[in-house]
Length: 252
Ligand SMILES: Nc1ncnc2c1ncn2[C@@H]1O[C@H](COP(=O)(O)OP(=O)(O)OP(=O)(O)O)[C@@H](O)[C@H]1O
Image (cartoon, rainbow, N blue to C red; front, top):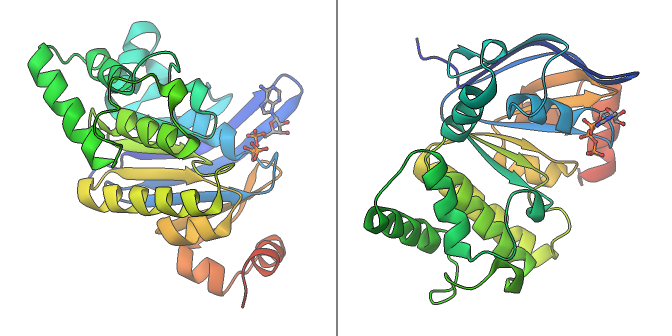
């Protein structure tokens, strides 16, 4: 039996008096794409932050490639995160250094995961830079000079360059023009199929989830109200909240 890349059990996160999420459980198998949808404040980012080791569970557990993350602290926790997780966020500045070149941002991640040797790093960065279809000749330009769509491509390259076990995407296309969004989603789908990386993608947009996710969690007020294979949940939503979400967003 293969070990899931993510095993989340009864995850509850509290922010002092506010509940972030409660009793959330799911597995993500290697190569699988899990979508999480729900309205603003439903707990999607809290779950993703816990999977990305930036939040500590108040109760419950998160296992990454079989490792119980509660037992990992300090520098070891940072190393585990660097090795196993790639992150793509809506707010590019949270992941990228805008004043640094695209190539530099991508290379940083290789250095953080223990890669050494200028030529080998340059060759790998060049390869991934091309895979995300960024313009040849701009690799040494500062990310600040890039458009929103190009910045997102740099983030994707940076996240994938070290071949993580799981890619966590938090609203990766929100805020981009519709045509740019479509191209970024195509890119994510192509790279996922090419690399076989497992993904957890958070979005308030069901069209994004429908395009990318094999399975889906629907969250409301911190809890999972429905889960299942994406096509089933979207074509035959059972929970009244999912029915509302689907009827308000998808043409039937
Ligand atoms: N740092 C924080 N401090 C206090 N409360 C927080 C914090 N982060 C999130 N919350 C609260 O936790 C709950 C879940 O928030 P979360 O950001 O996970 O939801 P979300 O579904 O990702 O929302 P959005 O789509 O708006 O990002 C909300 O009630 C939110 O106000």
